[in-house]
Length: 242
Image (cartoon, rainbow, N blue to C red; front, side, top):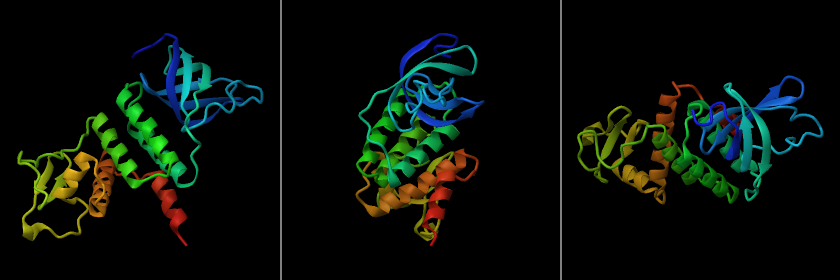
């Protein structure tokens, strides 16, 4: 892996998750621009006078230096880069959703510089008020980066997507054209041709396209997570209960 056994200086990084280690330290799961998802030891970070205390915040752009030969590298220095407003409310919840996807599906030490940029841009948009379209665009980029990209321009037989038709989206094949009699409107895997075209263009001005894109993304992500439920979605549903 890049930097294996060497010191890494000033690497643009976001903290995805941190948990206590021994009495005074933290293990930090981080997303680094040139190294992907990495595990880092923040030695003594929980001590009151530690230079790392209060710096290793989620959703904030950091520059981190680390070193080590083992799977868990040791942080040498971490500096906050600023420019990202703190997330709160729904924006914070949406940020945790992105982090859960990265923690669960992003391989360790597999660089994804483009996805890193999309993640940073999405957090900035969340700070202005999260929109569902922001989440859909991140999910699309996320799946594409992991090699699970959606087939959106043509159907499983290579024919251009027809905006007037409906399709059954088969994960290993792509969109399969449905006959009029086969379209029930009640299946999560059914999706309009217009939605596929809009998703490809990143255009969610049509509420139906936004809803159907959400259903498709939910199906795709559940498939690649082996059907395991998302903790953030579970918490969100609990908060919606009267």
